[in-house]
Image: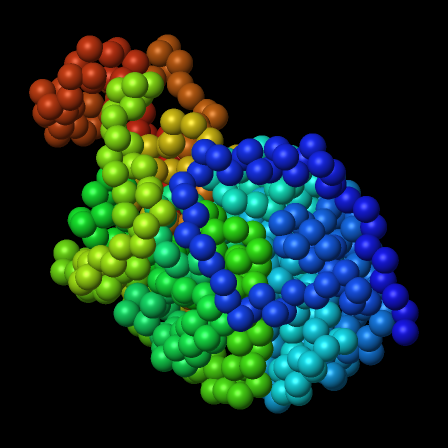
Amino acid sequence: MKLFVAPMFCAGLVASALASAAEDWLPPLPAWQGSSEALIKGRADNWVTPAELTGLTDSPDYAATLAYMQALVDSSDWLQLEQFGVSPQGRALYLIKASKALHKIANNPARPLLLVQAGIHSGEIDGKDAGLMLLRDIAHGSKATLLDNADLLFIPILSPDGHERRALYNRMNQRGPLQQGWRATAQNLNLNRDYAKADAPEMQALLGVINQYQPDLYIDVHVTDGEDYQYDVTYGFNEPFAAISVNSASWLAKVYRPAVNTALEQAGHIPGPLVFGVDNKDFSKGLSGWTASPRFSNGYGDVRHLPTVLVENHSLKPYRQRVLGTYVLLQQSLKLLNEQGKALILARQADMQARPKRMTLSFKAAEQADVIDFKGISYELRQSAISGDSYVAWTGQPKLYPQLPVYWDKVADKEVAIPQAYWIPPEQQLVIQRLKLHGIAISVLDKPQKISLRQLSVSDYRFADKPFESRLMLTDASFDAAVQSRSLSAGWVRVSTDQPLGRLAVALLEPTAPDSFFSWGFFPGMFERTEYFEPYAIEPLIARMLAQQPALQQQFEQALAKDEQLRNNPRERYNWFYRQMPFYDQQYLKYPVFIEP
């Protein structure tokens, strides 16, 4: 038997002492014990993981992780290592394929496929060490049956550059591991805000994996912070009452959640819903239940009919406890796919085949609340001499909040009739390439065509005051619409909504959608004018217009009476007439994507 010797990585007495001191500022920690602790292998085991060598208090660096992965893959015919991309700093992105039928792992309706992703925020690395332990137990332990009727893709580190920006002091709100990576990439992009716009090379590579392998269930492992509560593993997905993929969401709610909760509870963990306090100083006001938009993994999965579970382990629980809880969740997910995965495949197919006439683009919180018994932690409000304000101090003592209201995002906020198609001019190459990257089918016009299309004009808009995720977003915009007959030249691109990813196309191309390409600022050119007038040219033209159109003088005077800026700004007076002339830029403030009703 080939033995694996773990490489040395960050440890030492000084670092251990610092880690111990680092917990002094965090709230008191309730004691925990669970049967999942039996999953940890000791030093004598041939395949003990680097994290287990520390008692699950630390996590290995990129090189040590890769060394363990390579040795494990080399030892098993069921595992295969694949590079699927490169980070901005030049680090390879890897996934491990786990299957008893490796040659049939993609698009196999007989074998449900689970995609597990860790390290999208590399300071939140629980999933990496849990996944390596589970793969070890599949290849060299008692968990081989998990691959009898299901397959696994495992991405241990999606953000390797952030992973290697390791330090003892990256995350003050989180208990372990000792060395923690950084939340953002080397380009300072948050990958879990990048699914729709797909700016980051890491995200573009991930979308390639999704398109190539077409997984049936997607699990994205994070660590959350904020309020303290008893739950150590919280997770969520877009619920059936606010989901685009209703059939898949129903499977997650009715089949997945009860099975995973039971497995976690039996292992000594406390699973909970992915909710947030309405008022962080007054828990009695209730909770907010979130419906994610497509910039997030779970919102993106919903709109492209990929059932997606966002796992948010609780940051105040020890690393050991969080990793073991993640192991149990991943193990039960694979077990469930073995037993009931074909029902999920059928649910996905129903979602992909559905062709609704309308689509909700965003949701807002309901005024009427649901209620749950919430397993919280008691707290005190203390006055700060530093800030001058009060702050929450958690006591570490369990407290049940019975019948706590939960206000779910389930009321349609923005809604749209789904058009037949969107038409994109050939010069919009960035948008066209991003659509292809998402796997959306397009067709290119091979000869001129005349067609009736709707064009939107921006009547009012506002950009954000500062960049967000390296883009200046449109925070507000109003549109006027006009239907006109257009002569399109060869090269125009048609994006039909009559396709499996039709609703993803709507989410990206409907400008009022929260994560559309328009909202993310992909069309800056439409907000700029490059041709102007000189007074010596426009004065005689205005005189000619007024002579030919007597009513224009009255319209101008009415506008003067209503608009103070027009009365006080000579240039704006010229502009008022300029906008009535054929010389005016007819593409200014016109959304360049046309809509086929």
